[in-house]
Length: 251
Image (cartoon, rainbow, N blue to C red):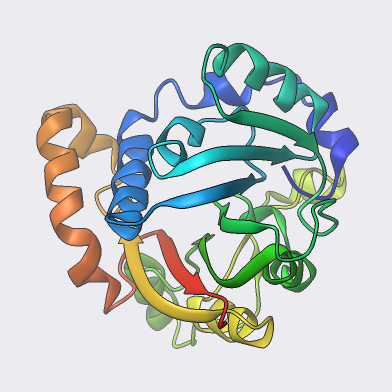
């Protein structure tokens, strides 16, 4: 899904299987996408780092055609099965920081569940800005280093939440150079988006109720309804573990 193609292809775990037990997180992200894109329609959308195409059916609700981009052949092979029969979808083997798409050729770009694999996302954000047409839209998601629980943990140690990315891999995974996994500070990401030429228009706080205990005791439908109601108001305080940015390329 990002830069280390061989690692994604060599990973024996199925990313599609990973999502089987994460219905709440999936529905929270679908709700965020629909909220941000409501009332809009696009000609060409590109889902960058989209894996097996989990969110492509949602994007087809808003776009005439969708290009699924991923750096892993394994992911794209899985996508051929998952998206079979869905019209208006093409697939390209490309990394987020080296998109083989023409400049100003895309109306909507999504980058979801990718930033946490990019310790330095600036090249990827620059590529998004390049392929977007003037006036085009992007939805960029990042794992939130400054979520509410983390702020409390840092405050307990009388420390500030770092503005630079934090590697959250175990020591063992860092030792064997596993796939990067970092959390980003939303303030830094917003500055990087602006530096790439992308204007931040809106934010949502997503997966606000991510809790094993809540999932056990609260019905899924009720949890998702509450999530939808919280995404906008909690964005103001950066509450949740995931932040969605709606950005536009001026034109």
